[in-house]
Amino acid sequence: MRPQLQGLVSVAGAVLTSCATGHHSEAAVPQRSCAIVVYNQTPHALEVRMRVRRLTTMPIGALNPGELLTHSLPCARGSVWISGIPIPSQVGAPVSFRVVEGGAQLVEGERVEIVLHWP
Image 1: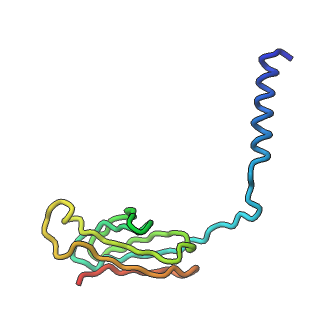
Image 2: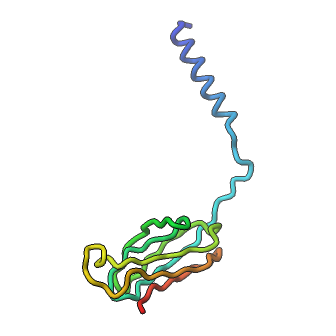
Image 3: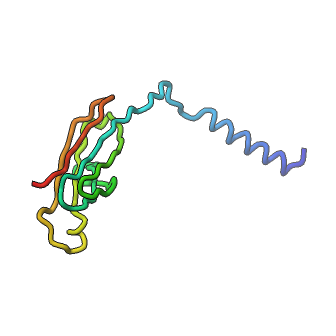
């Protein structure tokens, strides 16, 4: 075997060996997902955000008045907190509220409904 080919085969063998000995979970349990449905019962279109950490949220969608949004997340979180920010306020238009919020406990196998309304 040529020296260059022999070196390549040695490297490939080392890579395969390291992959084969990597840590593997003995009981890879799939995370269960819980469904949430968010309803917009306000007079304004909303940017819908979900709390990720204490002071951090992430956008999960936008809703016009009367619409609903579905989202899923791991049931292991235990609870969910949703905020709706009026989209018109983000472009400087006057609105009757700054934010609407709602939360719920997550129950495996059940759909959670959160209604955002004002007042």
